[in-house]
Image 1: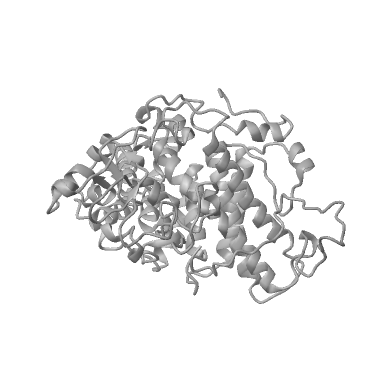
Image 2: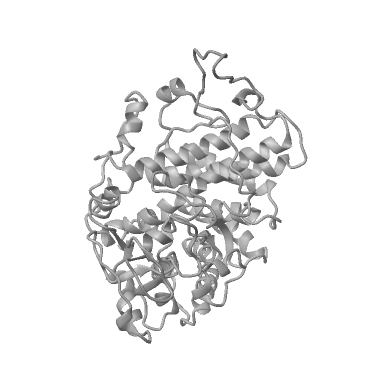
Length: 493
């Protein structure tokens, strides 16, 4: 990931035991100097910093948040080359997913790998005193909180492992912890992180106090803890460290990265190639290439794989004069018709579905294309939390607490940025207005499905959604089997 010393550090994974058996030294010398095990890894400040880079690296998995958070909702369809290409996304699109789903297993495995790497650091927090120790541990706690938040959002009750490595035997005997306990640990980690982090950091990509408080506010909101959410998010707003960018259409470009609206971004580099065989290994953002226009030739954009295609319903949800519509959704045929030489521009339709629309926030653009395979190496950062999201979360929290005055102030600040008229409603109508504004402001960013679930609106908007089932995704059956069958599957799967 760019701006965090793009040096891959090899160290023993927290869930992995490595051994060498039966080697004759006269043929292959395997003695040190370059071997090191987990028990004696942390000896210097640099060791902790390198391990922390490894913990950050699993943020790469967040491209799946964008895909599933949109495709599982009414905002987009899976798309792609065919309905069997990345089959798991099509199953989620149709609300027919089960325990055998590659994308859901990747979510489970990759985020637990992130947990494992943070635990590896935190288990050794008392081994050594060094100058940056408080910051390193605070960053590790933020990352662990982030990874567990993704896991509990997707799967509900999950095994909770804190400050320790877990080998195969331990994993098979570890029960799923109630979601309430997982949330309590996430809250503690993010509170500790906020206390140990600064508002401003010198190195882009490192998490900040504002990122920790904003994520903590979101965690409270997901649990309907509206008083805690309001007071926490108000700290971010009153800090004065953030403001809305005036030009919405520039928010999702490389030039617009880490601006005044950025609260937490995942940093990507287009300087290192990658392959489809290991998407978690990439240093670039896989989403823009996957979202790109299939076999496209023409100006502005680059060709891609036509995944995660916005729906007509999402396009129609915007007012015609809402600047966010065209900044968020590319109407390909309208775009071509408006060009000087439309007959020279061509593209193809994938067999996985076509709506005529593309995700214009995370899409391959000329001038923002990485090294081959350039479908996988976009340098465009993922905006995990924007200040607009903070304002809308704070608006919702205050509204649900009965403070409609503050709610309207925050809501209308977001609307005013794109020249939309003020809203003056109150009570439950204001709640609905805020939820609708979240859809418009944050479309294409991976939030919609989880917003619909937490607000109880999923069955209303998502075709095929079954209440008391689809609020959670199924645990991967392979992980249940690896745990010795000790975990119950989520209800109705």
